[in-house]
Length: 188
Image (tube, rainbow, N blue to C red; front, side, top):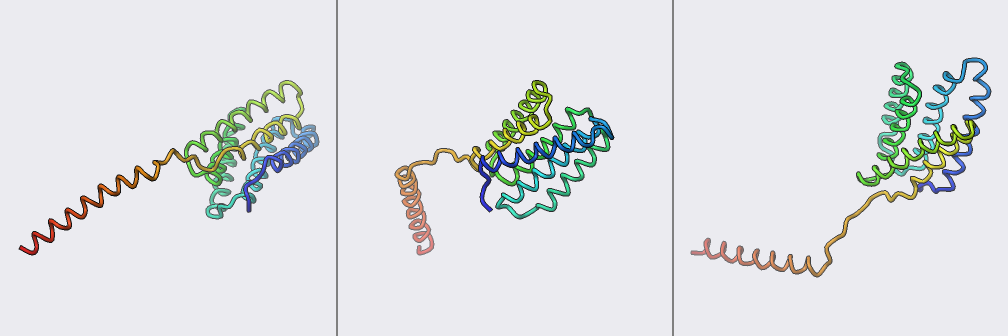
């Protein structure tokens, strides 16, 4: 599989936003808004993780990651923390899994954490301004789609080749002198 593009993220955001708004509108009269939100958040998280797994080149640990995420989701649902904490736990779980499957360094993972934080801020802004579940969900996943701009790894500056040649030349000269000294010790 190839790494997802921003356009993929836009489509996924629209689909998940539509799903969230339909479920909230349909189930709210029966079970209340709080219960529906606590159902929709892990459902969206699971759908997004399945999308990420489908676009990741890494194959190892998918079942373990999904099992750990499911256990965390069940534990958080059972303990029933406040809604903001509930949302943050799920966002942190998605961030952690995405960091494990798409990055090979701490700096890209921290940049992705910034994207996740920005997506939560965009969601809060959208829901407070519009009151629309679709727009809030779409804004969240639209900002999440920006993770494709983060490079998988960040490499530092490497020394230029001439300096390495000089360093190796000095080492080689010392090695030859040491070999010569050992030969003299054993031949005497």
